[in-house]
Length: 285
Image (cartoon, rainbow, N blue to C red; front, side, top):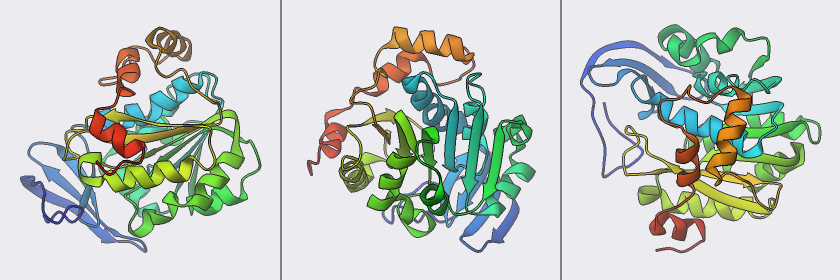
């Protein structure tokens, strides 16, 4: 398969079988069976998720904001149609409502058909609401202060995911978050996409008093650490205190359930390598 995200650098898999390929209203979607990474979902030529290492990204995108907040009742997930983020969010016993808005229903269908272990029983959890629709439109129409955490699991800021990186989108996110609410979104691999982190951080700072990022090492996403942007309506969050994170994880019932995330990993993930900190702070390096 061809890699299109980085024209001058790519990766390859030994593909044992193409399980299904569809062209939806939004993108080309392929489900592959590979020798090294199990089943893989590819969107418009870019690998999005693999069975082998999905836990790394999903755990950090979910547990970090929920435990940084500490008292989450309602969560909005935009994208993440494979169900992995939804499953981790619903592990938290304090969560009463989780709304997943995925623009492409084919992503959900293909994930449920070929990658059922990723979403697991989350699809039928009574706390989950699944909406096939436009996440930007949903956010613009949602009532004020109705979510504690927003998790944006989008593709990169090209094509269908581009509108999730705009000033207006972050303005609306701030409006629908409760006091102390948190929004997170993937910001790419800074070694190759530093501009993405710089621009997203600049936008979020217009609407949130606390803006930062943390890192996660996902083997499939080539180029080193991936950055996850985090912004809060609090002036600061306690994501750096491993002891407090551990206490919150125990109360939420998620301690010991992960393969990558731990309280110590969460705290350490906010200590950024200088080249990533420079991008976060607007330096061109």
